Length: 170
Image (cartoon, rainbow, N blue to C red):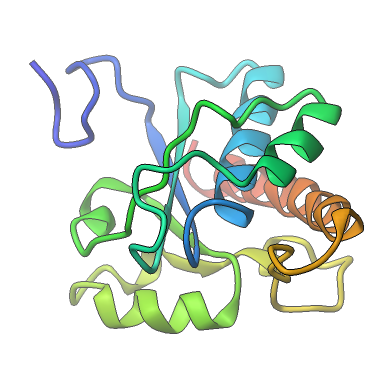
């Protein structure tokens, strides 16, 4: 039997994080993969889980962009097995943190967010204060260097998300 989080009852991680970008093929699956790898290195797999989604349905069912997967693989993170899905209002009931990769996603997610769940919505770069930006740029239309830059930002932000979880939720 599965819980409302979609995992076997009694086997769900204590804290669930959802990373959200536009189509769920570049930034958010990269964040999911990097975060899962970090959680694994820290020995927290049974306590912290992650998923990703997009604000739009453009790529539902598709794997991550090949350039995102290749850049992540160079850093030892496999994301090619992930598949895109669209974010939905029910995600705010399942996930303890819904993390928008940029301000436009935050606006879309705020519209989707049920009353009383607003505290679950976060902007990703707020967890990476060493970067003086609020948005993770979309590397989709740029060259390979953009994917590397995005990975740097995502690694920093994922460390911050995990630190936040340790301080406030575990």
